[in-house]
Length: 120
Image: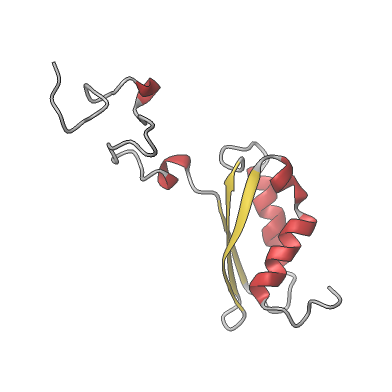
């Protein structure tokens, strides 16, 4: 890490993820350091994009956690891969997002593509 020791923890974690975990980007995934607090030693990373549902997601998260826990200033690492429904508002959110009907098959599971209206 020559030359980066004085950089903020968040920046160092982001740089490490980009350099040492290229599999994330190779599989169409994304990573974001949500928290990197050198005072309490907690780091939270969120993986998205292609990471959701990826068959090697558990291995990737384990590898990230194992490596970062070797850093002297890190005591706790959480790597999350939110469920796709979480990022869209969950299953109870009836309205469409960006004009896409989120109901099963796009057929309007609630009777129409506008669940607030009663169409017969």
